[in-house]
Image 1 (cartoon, rainbow, N blue to C red):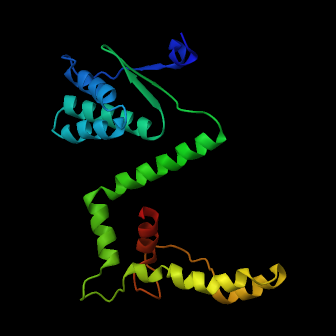
Image 2 (image 1 turned 60 degrees about the vertical axis):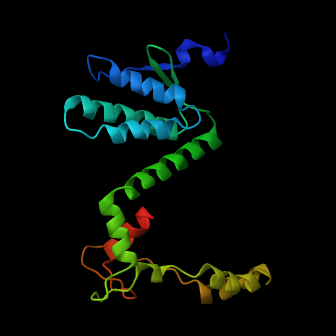
Length: 198
């Protein structure tokens, strides 16, 4: 028996969903048949379990927990009777990758929400009756910025700071509920929410 198969490394995932065992069987199938991308197969089960009722809610919850674990790099294993989970690779690099994956996964979940997509769309394309300008006006043109910064990179190190200060002038702005951004007319709170989502 290899160290990978040692039972003490795997933890039993045993949610109480229903009496028939059909939901647990579906979760086990999603893990065994979706070996290359179990998160996608588990998301499909969660999406199919939106009906009202305790069994559907428990099934959805179990599928989303397993999906999140898989997306964060956890290993999932299923046999004919049970589901087992264990953390993925250890080490600082692996932990940073797992945290990055988790944050991206949470962001993608938020962006899949209809109200969030509508919020992003309204800020990017305000109606013609709105006084606001698109929030994308606050994003620098990367090509233009590169053209400005490339010559500075060629300068001696001790003279770069003064030239950079002419191009990059960062500032802090307090985010509150009522203040509007001076460039776009959008509430600063909404600007912050937009960039947090995107």
